[in-house]
Image 1 (cartoon, rainbow, N blue to C red):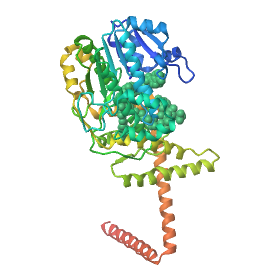
Image 2: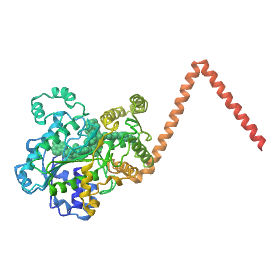
Image 3: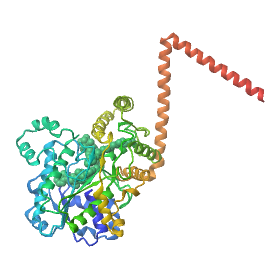
Image 4: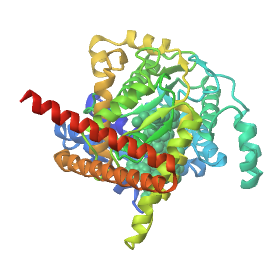
Length: 494
Ligand SMILES: CCCCCCCC/C=C\CCCCCCCC(=O)SCCNC(=O)CCNC(=O)[C@H](O)C(C)(C)COP(=O)(O)OP(=O)(O)OC[C@H]1O[C@@H](n2cnc3c(N)ncnc32)[C@H](O)[C@@H]1OP(=O)(O)O
Ligand SMILES: NC(=O)C1=CN([C@@H]2O[C@H](COP(=O)(O)OP(=O)(O)OC[C@H]3O[C@@H](n4cnc5c(N)ncnc54)[C@H](OP(=O)(O)O)[C@@H]3O)[C@@H](O)[C@H]2O)C=CC1
């Protein structure tokens, strides 16, 4: 989301002088190498076309959320406090399996530290915090208010500070209570921390639901990660994922990333200009406005990947969702574990390292963590989103479009799936005929395998059971009778 925000600011807000972005070194790359890489990304193609020198506006600031004071140097603190007008805070850990202490540090303590830095900023007009629509997923109906936190954040921070990691792991389920993971729990605490500062700053809180590929900007279908549904779509497209627990009729509250960013920017403007007395919360969701369901998503994902197959698929794409636990377990056994076992056996026999079972184990862990969100639905009130839209001029409504009533879901899902192929997997669209050929080969292998298996089972059956033999003779004689009748009647008509 950070990248999409930077791109949109550069493209649609030419009067913005500079963008200070907090970046950490990662995976052997320095801060500036990472920023260089980001600017080379396809996402920035349109900006690059309009202004090849756009990089001059981007000023990276070295920062690490795990460190005290976010590890921002005193000189950088000086720069930031003297020239920042608006803060957009979207850094977080979004992993569902993050240990509580880590999630607390990244999502709550780092937010607290950024807020105290913001308080020193002399020209700050607005502080926009990105939360999640699922921060309060323990409720069915979610209003645009900050709910009382499950625990006072400061108390939890103080307690976890002295606790051993093993103790924290043991008490985590008790602490998070009816929330499914440490992510939603710490995001709820972060909202509370933001609220505690709302007297001193102009604050807006954006709560997106499940962020997906871009709808329109900078081009349809842009996505570059495996988070949320993207990984599920790819696994289904590769023919690996065949079954998942999800409710066909539950609303799939996907929200395109460009919609979230447009709303975030509009909220930044509104907060700075109108300075609301208390922090305004914007539920940024689609379910209440233009609902679409997981069953429909399944249909359109499968149809897109059949028409535009991914390269080197493991099997032909054919994923089904079910809300029934036992049916899902059955298909996991038959369509996941059994083929994985056979394929690994084949790899072993051909002297290679088995890998399919390992892939399936990881897939099962990942979808197990997502099922909570795909098996039920929520109702979000979106009055503030509507209010914000009514405040925009006609031109701004177009430039910062977040009117999801216009979203055509089948078209969006098709672009989303093609986006995963092009931008996540870096596959070329010109290779589609070869991918189709590969699917035909897989279909033939399946037919051959099924026929051999059927003949084998039948042979064993016939050898062991008199009744099976009788049925077999009966069926064969019936076929012969039918054939001879068919021959006789065709001779008569001649
Ligand atoms: C036919 C379809 C029907 C559809 C059916 C329904 C679908 C429903 C789907 C979903 C709905 C729910 C969604 C809810 C959302 C809530 C909203 C929010 O507010 S938050 C945002 C959401 N956050 C997450 O999505 C984090 C979830 N992910 C995780 O927590 C972890 O990733 C986890 C536990 C699932 C897996 O952790 P690990 O440690 O096993 O794996 P790791 O490190 O994440 O990555 C696996 C491999 O993928 C590569 N990878 C990851 N990103 C990559 C990238 N961009 N490019 C290339 N490779 C990448 C990595 O390098 C790694 O590969 P190497 O093993 O190292 O080789
Ligand atoms: N994706 C989704 O479906 C949803 C996301 N959100 C919220 O939107 C925001 C952005 O999410 P999204 O873009 O999807 O997530 P990403 O994981 O892509 O982005 C998170 C950002 O936080 C940074 N970050 C994480 N840990 C550290 C650290 N220790 N030090 C410095 N920076 C760090 C990451 O930097 P780096 O690149 O160095 O890792 C990355 O830029 C989050 O607040 C999330 O809670 C809300 C609803 C849905």
